[in-house]
Length: 212
Image 1 (tube, rainbow, N blue to C red):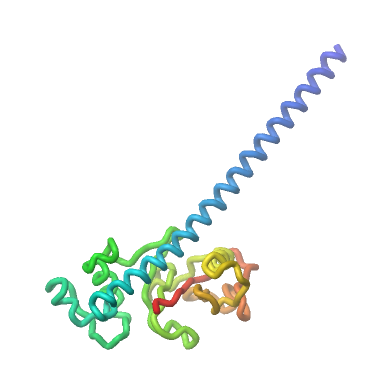
Image 2: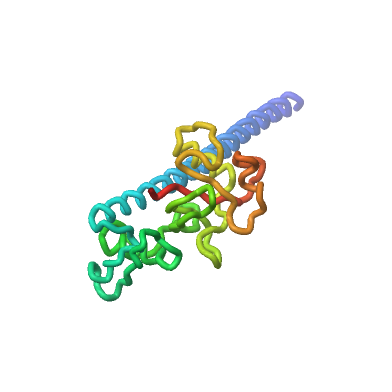
């Protein structure tokens, strides 16, 4: 009897070890899958930024104007499409025209602002801050004042910068991708000093890249 119990006990321990090993494999696969999904989202954002830049370059080379600001758009694309004022800047009221002009010219496949795999949408901003002058593509969550709401966690923003800038450790406002707090986020939550604040896990950041 005691020998049977010993054998039974030993078999149960082996089974338990196998179960724990399988759980470990499944857990590892889940975390790996999440990492792969996150990496795919990061790549898609970089691809979107690049797609918009290329579309704008083609538009300027073809028509000699910025999409959205194009004063001849009405004549190029028909009376249903409004023209910009032609002052050389994509202003707030011209941002929706920006996407329409690119679509009508055949350089993008949607006349509405592109959305990202993280959610939120891309917008075109002129002089978003005194340190960021010119035209910028901004990725943020939709708010009542535009697509400037916090969308990315600091970690996601850091990975985005690393992918874009070759992994170099540079400040939030250096390199090809700039990172800032989203609208309504307390200063220091996304960027502390000049570095991305990786102690915060919540979505508190927006990302920008120069259009020029």
